[in-house]
Image (cartoon, rainbow, N blue to C red; front, top):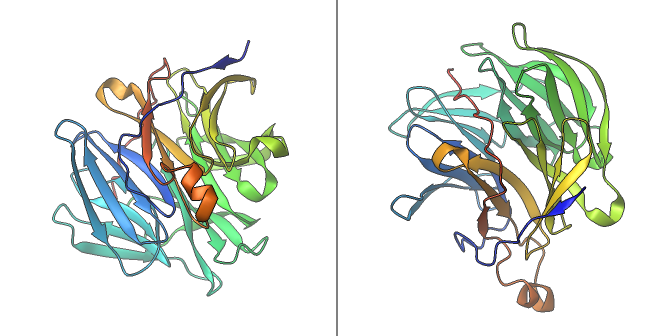
Length: 295
């Protein structure tokens, strides 16, 4: 039976992001991280104090993940920026062979600590992107999938045997067989197809029971699919441009949700005054911990 969960009535933060994305929980600091892609901003939010800070970059940043020992891995326009604990750039990992018009998209860390990220054409031209894997300390990323279009959600099952991947242009969540020891991801196949009227699948998060929570862009909702691919819960949101989600807070008991207000104006924006805000909801299940990137 599909459950409809109580919708959040108020956002946690009214940041009015143009395109809020890439949320991640920094367990060492007890902070939520996310970005506003179009404004090139990286945010930190400390729920314990309510403090919100942000850093501006001179270009798009599409995802952020904590590094082991402090610092951050930031998916930027043309590569991954590895920031030290003081915020300085220790290293930039470039992506050879990418078309000039491409930028990085969503990112994630697998159970063994490898960093994964996708690329996409800035004008959303089809088939010009790819999915990459970056092992800790490796000089360059390895290309795993070719001819993707709009690389978005990434996640792994609790036992590490499955990898989930969303290319939003396909309107699907795909699954691959995954080997945590080697990082091999094979046999990509459709897992769940999302009907047009429900929105476009974007970012995702995996819970401790193996459920996959998927943000539906322009669908005003997040859906949970159980490990068998059955739609068993819906979290409605008061805004349509829902971009991504991540578990955080004490014992990973909250689902944080990013949203956007890109290309919204006039009546549409007036009807959704909280577009671009960050929301949080207790969805009745804890999140699956995501390891910090050790590279």
